[in-house]
Each structure stands twice: as structure tokens, then as C-alpha cells.
Length: 296
Image (cartoon, rainbow, N blue to C red; front, side):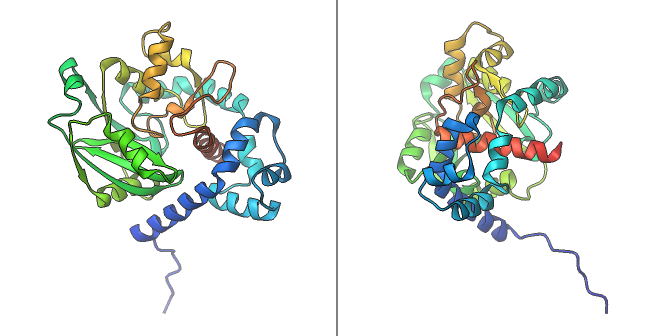
């Protein structure tokens, strides 16, 4: 009898277990990532990075590679913004058709169906009154994730660095009038679709003022592995001189990672403020750049 040697697809519990391991590894590497975020342009050595976080080079490389899938050296090389900017310049025009169709790009993680929910002045005053939001926790490659689900799709994605109450309060204050219902199973299902073996577009609901929604959709022009300046995002949103309003809208983005506010950088190429920390911004940009290089 012939043996079936075709490997079986991992089950949902197995995928969640792998996500949980990567989530734990991210937290172990957070200090290193923060250090690299400040110094990636210097291309630090493995020994320097390991010493900065008090680990042996062997131990540091083993944990980092298990989390990122590549060595620290490859990760730092991938995050180089000269390469990222070339990717943007080469790929932005190709992505225009996908952007206009409401999709963000070719990778499955960012193959999103955008359900626009621009808030009216009355909606803003009501702060979510009349809405039911399901929320729960699930592992992600960038730490513990707080998922907030509206009727039509994902409305919020936040992260926790051991401060779950703070992360929940940060999400809750956006829509305090809504009926918040705990649903960890729904959160885990969404994590599987975003980071596991899910198929098809992930519905994402943009709940914000008309200009906020314009900015958030403009962010989707930036391809994975690329970056854009705040000025570029402002121009794409239709107000090229509205730097302050655009920066405020980027900072107010409730759907971390999937609406890629992490790809907005300063004009001089620096990794500037990110609501969930520069370490996480560097982690996300680096992983996207690595994935882009592997596909190219």
C-alpha cells in the first residue's frame, strides 16, 4: 500500500499555537527591536544587538530567527528605507487599480475588503451609540492583539505589552457609547484569517469622520515593504497642505497594521512616533520588507 506523503494542512488550534509562540517571542525581542528601530541605519552587528539586550549572540539569534524567520542581519538589511522607497516608487502605480477598487494590495494579509463607515456629525457626538462591538484577545506575530468587530467587519486592532486594561481603554474611548460584548472566539477566528490560513478578503470597517476615512484609505496606497511621507499621504487624501490634520488622522487609525499607518515616516526617513511603539513599528516594517524581498 502506497503511503500518502503529502503533508496535511495545520489545524486551527495548531495555527493559533504557532501564533502564540511568535507572540511570546515578539515580547522577548521587543527591547531589541526598539534598539534596532533607533539604529537600523548604522547596520549594527549581531554582537552589538545581542549585547544591547543582555543576551549571548547565539541565544539572541535563535529567538530572533524563530520569531522573524530570518536572521537579525537580514531583518536590518530589509528595513533599509532606500530599498523601501524604491519599492514604493516602483509599485505605487501598479497598486492604483487595487486601491481604487477598495483593495490594498496583492498580499493576502492586506487583501482587505473596505466597508466605509464615515461618521456623520451626529454619529461623532453619539460616540458609537446604537452599535454593537464584539471584542476579544488573540495572538499575533507582533504580540497580544485586541480585535474589535463591528457588524460588517473588523473595526479595531490594538496591541498589548502586558497592559491589557490600557489597550482596551484606548479602544473603548473611541466608541464609548457602543454596546461592548466580549467574544474571544470571534477574535481568534479573525486572527486566523489575518495571520493564519484564512482565505479570501478580510472585511474591514472604517468608522471615522470623512477626512479620517480619506486618510486611512490613502494609507492603503503604500505597498507592503514600502513607506511614504506624511506629506505624500496628505496629498493622496486630497489636502496636500493639511499636515496637522493628516497626522492626527494617521494617529487616530484604530486598525493597526491592516490599515498601515506604520508605513508613514518623516520626510528625512526617520521612524517617527507610532501609537503602539517604535519597536512594533520597526518589527512590522521589517517583516513586511523581508516578505517583499522573498517574493521579489
